Amino acid sequence: MTSESALKNRHLWIDHLRSFVFALLVLDHCAHAYARDFGRFHFFKDFERGLLGDILYLHNNSIIMPLLFFIFGLFIFPSIRRHGVTGYLKKRLPKLIVPYIIGIPLIVPLLVFPRYQYLTNPLMSYTEFWQGVYFQEKLQGGGPFWVLYCLLLFTLVAITLSKVLPSLVPSLGKLFNKAVQRPVPGICIFLCLSILILGGSDLKWGAPWWIGFGHLETNGDTFWVIVDKVVNLFHLQGSRFLLHALYFTTGIAVSASGCLDKPEFWHHLSRRWPLWTTAMIVTGLFYCIYTLTFFYEGAYSDAVHRAIRFEGFKWHEAWPLVIEHGPGVLIRTSFHGIFCFFQAMTYISLFYRFVSRPNAVLCHLAACSYGIFLLHEVPVIWGQYFLAGSSLPILIKIFLLFAIGGGLTWAFVGGIRKVTLVRKIIG
View 1 (cartoon, one colour):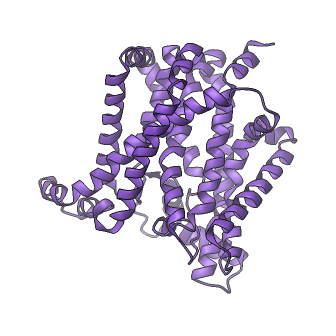
View 2 (cartoon, helix red, strand yellow):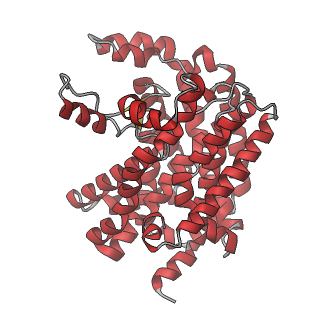
View 3 (cartoon, one colour):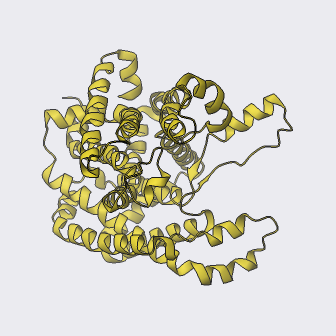
C-alpha cells in the first residue's frame, strides 16, 4: 500500500464527514424554500412555509460552511509538502476554476429562472431569459460557486503568507498545541474570537448582504460594462466570510500541530461526544428560540449597516446606533458562534468514533460529493418550482426533494465520473 493510500485510510472518517456535510447542504437547500422567515433568501420560495424550515436552516446554515472550510484547511499544507506549491496548484486550480467558468453561464441561470418566471414573467421562455435577462440583470456568482471563489481566495492568501512569513504556519501549529494542553482557555479564546468576528461582521456588513469590489464607473462604455459585470461576480457573504476564514485557519493549525496524524488526540476528543452533543443541543435551543422569537424585533436589525452605507456617514455617529440596535444583533451572533463551535465538535467526535470504517456506499458518496455539491441545486430548485402548487405537507415536499433531487444528482455524478477528464475536475 502506498503512503498516500495509507493516509487516505487513516483519515477515512474525514471523507465520510465531508460527505455528510455535503448531504446536509442538499437537505438545507431542499428545506430552504419552506422556511417561514428565511425562505425569502432562497433562489425559490414556496408560498406555503413553516417553522420546520427555519429550524433546519438555522442548524444547517450555522455549521455547513465552517466545517467544510475547516476540512479544506486541514489538507492544504500536507498536500503542498507532498507535491510542492506548483504541483498542488496545478492539481487544485482546475477543480476550482473550471467549474466556476462553466457554472456561471450554464448552471446559475437554471437556479435563477424558476423564481423569475414564477413571480415576474410566467410567459418568458428559458432561452429568452438566458439571452435577454440573465446576462443583463441577473448575472451572479451564486449557488455553490461563491464557495469556489472563497476557497481559492483563502488558499492563495494562505500560500502567499506562508512564503512571506515562513514561521507563520509552524507558529499556528504551536499555538494549537498550547490550546490542546490547556483546553478550557483555548476553547474560551476560540469562542470569544467567533463571537467578536460574527458580531462585528454582522453590524458592519449586515446579516444577509454580500460584499465585493463595488461597481466601476462605466460611463456606458461596453468594455467597462463587461468588466464591471465580471468583477461583480466575486462576492462573499459579509457577515460570515471571516468566520469561515477562522475555521479554515484552524484547520491549517491542526495539521501544522501534527495532531492530524495523532489518533490519541482524536480519540481523546471523541470520547467526550456526549458532552459536545449536549452542549450543541442546549446552545442550539437558545439560538433557535431567540432568533425566531425576535426575528423582526431586533435580532436582525440592519440599522448600523444601513447608516454606514449612507454617503457622508461619520464613524462617531455609529456608537449611538450600536447602543440602540447592537444588543439584539449581538445576542444572536453570540449564540450563533457558540452553537457553531459545539456543532463542529459534535460532528467531528461522532464521525471519528462511529463512522471511521470503510463502507462502500459512503466511499462512493465521498467520491461523488464534490460533483453533488456543484450540481444538486438544479434538480432541487426545479423540484420546488414544480411542487409550488401542490397541497402536499411541507415535510413530504422536503423528503421528496431530498430523495429524488439528491438521488438523481448522485446517480448523474456517478455516471459522468467515468469520463477521465470529468473525474480530474470533480474528483
